[in-house]
Every structure is written in C-alpha cells, then in structure tokens.
Length: 314
Picture 1 (cartoon, rainbow, N blue to C red):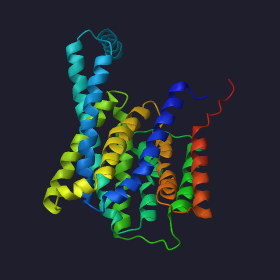
Picture 2 (picture 1 turned 30 degrees about the horizontal axis):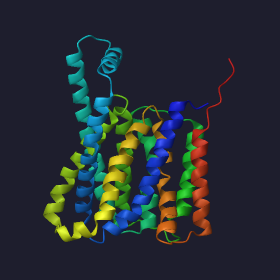
Picture 3 (picture 1 turned 45 degrees about the vertical axis):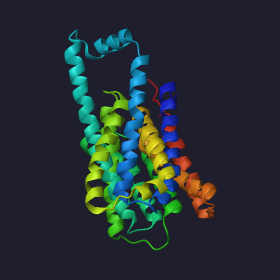
C-alpha cells in the first residue's frame, strides 16, 4: 500500500503536469510576440524572483531548534558550521546542474518546434518516460519493476495515439526535440539525486536564475527584444513564469522526493493529455476518438505504475 508521503508526492506531480499542460496554451500565445530565448529568459527570471519571498517566509516559519536537530540527526556530527557549508555547496551544485539542463532542454525544444509539428514534438518530448528508466539503469543502477515497464509501454501507445499523425518521419525538428527529451530525462534524474539532500524551493530558485542567465545570452545576441512585445505577451509570460516555472517546477522538485524517478516521469508525462484537454476547453479544439483513447491509455499507465508490488510469502 502507498504511504501518505507517496500519495502526497503523486498528487503534487499530477498538479505539476496539469500546470504544464495548460502552459502549452500560454507558450503558443506568447510566441506570437517574443522570441523563444526571450520568452524563456523572462519566464525563468520571474520564476526565480517569485520564489525569493517564499524562501524567506519558509525560513522564518521553521523553528531554529527543529532545524538544528534535523541537521544533527542527518549528518551525525556536532560541527554545525561545517554541516551548513557542505549543504550550501550541495545546494549550489544541484541548482546549477538543474539550471543548465533546464535551460538547454527548454530552449532546444522551442527551436525544434519551429521545424516540426506540435503533435510530433509532444510525442518525442514525452519519450523521457522511456529514457528515464534506461538512463537510471545504466548510470545510476536504479532498477524498475516489470509493472512499471508495462506502464511505460502502455503510456507510449497512449502518447502515440494522442500526438502523432499518420505520416511518420524524422526531420531536423524531430532530432532537436529528441535531444530535448534526453535533456529532460537527465533533468529528472539530477533532481532525483539532489532533492532528498537540499531544500527543494531554494534549488528551484537557483535553477531558474541560472536558466535566465543562460537564455539571456542568445536572446540578446540573436533576437530583438522590444518592451511592446513583452507588454503584449504579459499574460502568457506571467502564467509561464509564476505558475509553470515558480510553482510547477518547485512542486516537481518537492514531489520527486522519495519517488521512483520512472513513476515520477510517467505522472509528469500526463501534461500531454492535459495540454490536449486545455486546447479543447480554452481554445475550442475538439478531441477525436483516437485522442480520447490516447488519454485513457495514459491515465491507465499512471494507475498501473502506482499499483503496489506483490510481496512473496516468507
């Protein structure tokens, strides 16, 4: 049976996928006014800034005595100053690694979408549900149950029905989005590595600020940044910055604590289903029978992945 922490974390990841799914609408509208690097730079900067008061508030709410007890129990030493220095170093390392991967993945995805269809990009990006367990097994020696591999296969079929058109081929955009999917897979595994060791909100804040800096360089070199364009796209930029970045990616980091990264990637891949539903509700785009079947299979894969493992008798 799943414990309360696993249920809570699963719900947090589901909320993350919901926010990301709706964010496809915001990104589509925002790209009518600003370039991809500019969009990512501004939304990441907003996401980082939004988290600064949250970090301050959470720090004030936490009792210093409880914090010291946790640190001593975690490290098992009395040298608190050295313990805090090590924690800050780990936090900075995790934030920078996540920020670099996040920046590369989101910017390559935005460029790749220009050379392929949204459906193909959605399917190829969501292939991280297959890449995550493979990379985890190869590099981190993380084993996944046969039930989870079955859920992965079911989710892939659902994603194909949901996103792909009949004429399948590999082009320049498809290759770029595939690279993006690999980067997102590494991003999930890096979060899985660092999130149990550091404050998730602080790491998310560093991640966004790093991404903003990395996106700013190509934005100023290759795009024309106009205030009028930013003002015209204020609503989608705020949604992408505050909710998609500031809230959702922080929920991802918190929700992935003590979660199997393969299961986490399956839940997060629901953003493909939710993006179709958001397009239907917000933009009036209708769902075909094939797309509805894809959504059903995706939800079935999530349920399958969450089923407890049968224990053998002693």
